[in-house]
Amino acid sequence: MNKSLIAISISCIALTVSGCGTLYKLDVTAYNNPNIDVGTSYVILSGNPDIPVSSPEFVEYASQVERALEPKGFTRVADDDPTKAALGIYVSMAVSDPAKRYHSVQTGLYESPYADESAAAVRGSGQSGGSNPGSGGTSQAKMPASPAPEMLSGVAENSFATTVFTKHLNLVAIDLQSYIKEIAEVGREDAVPVEVWSVDIETTGQPSDLSEVFPVMVAAGQPYLGDSTDDVVQTKLSGSDQRVQHIKSGN
Image 1 (cartoon, rainbow, N blue to C red):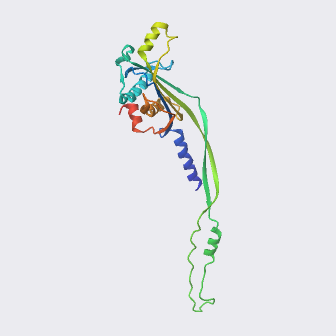
Image 2: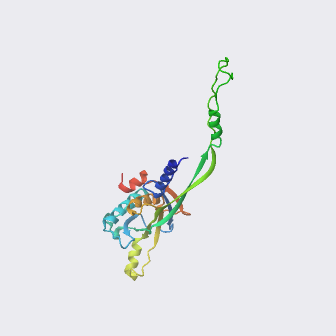
Image 3: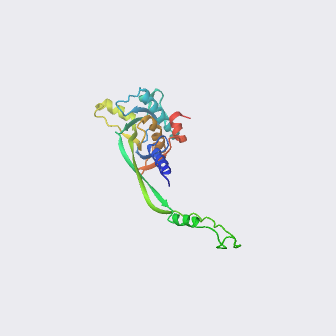
């Protein structure tokens, strides 16, 4: 393989790792409490103090979560009125500081060990059938030798690094009415919400822009909303996947 092909291979792998909307590797963990059944109506609440529910950013996130919940049988309460909802679904997200991820690509080096001999055979071809001019012998040219098969002579290793970010999304559904009641009785600081179900999604790679990765994480967690997983579920999802596009835009 020549140097240009090696460069192309490295570039392709770098693009895949960087996750330019091409492919994401995600870890999903889900939990639900089978002993609690308070209903399926809900309001969406922010689990990030710096992202209020009224901000345009959170409004977009909430609409994407709503699209994921609808096929699972959950109904969002109009105007997000907490007094009319069985569940309060907290949406929390975070992006880590940049980190380096190192990669290596091994490429075989090939050569023809008989290249010199083959060339010599071609160069040595000449007349046959007579040693003297005019002797009546027939001159016959030899055919060029077939190319010798290439043999593996070594392995070249090319290394490169990419900057990656770990993105985390957490959806937690609580018994909202019992929580509101407890807040009234003991105060917000002492009230403890009862968790009904939760889903955690994590992915590491590029980009750092959470808004680009958010619909991918929601789509990855959608099958497990309201359910449980026995262990971490590892999945791969393309940014152009139809499920992601539906979460993102509703189309």
